[in-house]
Amino acid sequence: MANTLVLTFMLVFISNIYAETLIFEENFNQLDLSRWKHELTLAGGGNWEFEWYVNNRSNSYTKNGSLYIMPTMTEDAIGTTTMQTGEINIWGGSPADECTGNYFYGCDRNAAGSGNYNNPIRSARIRTAESFSFKYGRVEVRAQLPKGDWLWPAIWMLPKYNWYGNWPASGEIDIMESRGNSPNYNAGGNNQFASTLHWGPDWADNRYEMTHSVYNNPTSLGDDYHIYGLYWNSDKLFTYIDDPSNVVLNVDFTTQSFWQKGNFPSVFSNPWVGEPNSAPFNQEFFFTINLAVGGTNGYFPDGVGNKPWSDSDPHCINSFWNNRGSWLPTWNGEDAALKVDYIKVWSFDPVNEIEVE
Image (tube, rainbow, N blue to C red; front, side, top):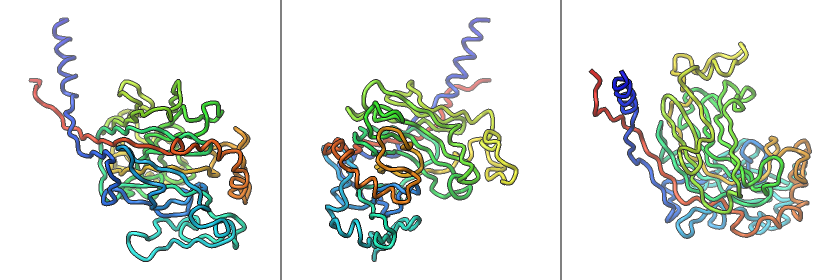
């Protein structure tokens, strides 16, 4: 009887073994713009963040085999007067320099007309939407996080086709999202990161809190490189740090659908009706890497850590910049950059070498 149980266990275990095939590898020996497209926008990520995303080698470049996403001062590029009282028009005139996001005045901002400074920080956000996407597999991103107050680095994934509708109905996978503040920042500093799934029939009914987990490291994640991993198949999705045994977020798809899990108001229709439990996380997703700054969505809570702006202040961007003496000294050169050594993706191929009769 014991031998039968052992054999049964082994057969079940073997039946769930997958051979992994490397399908994507980026080592950042150069910044390949045929693979990575820059987002060009002042829109602030939908959170009224304070950065302007540009394609400029001061903000996105490779060095010693790593990608650097580096924040710089807008006034250094366009002058203080234009930043504080002028207009920035980035509609562009060719496919390579067209503005990629017009929402929230993302392609044209006029400080004189709004009473708000134009985005005072320049940074970068790059994506593989046009070059690479995948469904199911294992991801490893080796990265070193930035140090500096109010920096907001992220390594994440978005759906290629919005199969189930606009965000968040088609999902979002945040592998790593962190803050550059020191580890003693009460909302979580650069010794901490979170993994999150965003999903729901409408932006106001995003149930991300149910699929969100935070990891606390003993030391700053800006001191060294770490691996930020994702394992994703039709039954489950989990993230990890350094090794698959160090699980951060673990989401089981087998017991209930996301519609059942979310308990949504009856006013909404199920966008995933007729789909497997893993929907909306059963379609192709692409990579996005960015370094944001600040914002007004509560990611940096009011009243925590000497925050120099209030989310409810209609001129919060001015308060942020006018109080730069409190945060700019924490941005120490390339320590303030998000550095990515490599990204690898493996697909899963079932191994069926043993058949159960």
